Length: 374
Image 1 (spheres, one colour):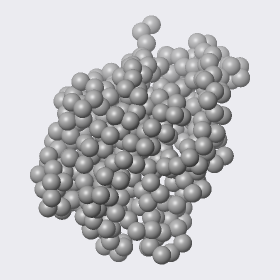
Image 2 (spheres, rainbow, N blue to C red; image 1 turned 120 degrees about the vertical axis):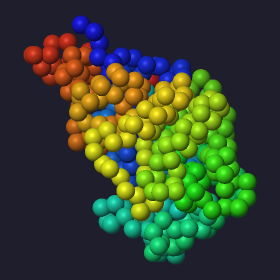
Image 3 (spheres, rainbow, N blue to C red; image 1 turned 90 degrees about the horizontal axis):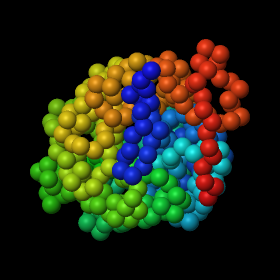
């Protein structure tokens, strides 16, 4: 019996993945001063036993002011690095699943409260609040405290912070880095004409608006080991007239590929509150398909991909090379097991769980070998 495409191995750069299922980065808003806690050991630990091909650590701020909220994870100093090392040591002790990290700066969408406390922006001077920065002094919501338009010096500091965090990720032995240039955060803000109104060489034309995100990519690529992949997550469209478009995304993807980008993770939206998103299963897949047709590097599709046959169809038809699961795997942390059972494939599992192998699927689970202990 042929292996379903979803469960065929794939190489992203020099990194070998057992299958095409990626666990997307999902913010947990549960860090303390940027430091991971026991919650992250539980959260990442269970996902590392899911049978997916790759686990991605949530959006990790490269500076304290780049956090979405005061509960965000960071990787900007020795203390945040040490906390992450403790979590990774526990996870790797029991799982060999490759682990990537998403490095991010929230830009004008920073300094917010926790989602379950309303998620509204917290103004500077209030507890847990700080002054935000952005390409231009345009707030996300009209009622938000406006961001400060970044100077060239501030841009250099952020670029260097991305590189420094990439070097820390390398010390932690992480297998890949993803740069967050989506969902209305800082790098996306530079890309979109709706948020970037600069009149210098970083605003105006498409080439100018791409300039800073590409400088950040170059800095991260130079800072992270050459044999390990660096990917970029993009929002392919703002879903607002006159905003960032799929055509712009294709141009950006080509520029990234030429600079040594290993993969493009295609999402959409998040930049403007006026966005009109036609939400439904696979609603972002056409944008991934457009990028896939334009580049030779692997492309990841994401967004309400919860049905096993749908996920298989996306990779089998060539719309994307991998599918990313986010909320769906929080709801069902054994989603890859269940997809493999449905499609007639197999996945790795911890030896402690092999007794759970269903009688009707006698070849579903194979023993997982623990990873290296940092």
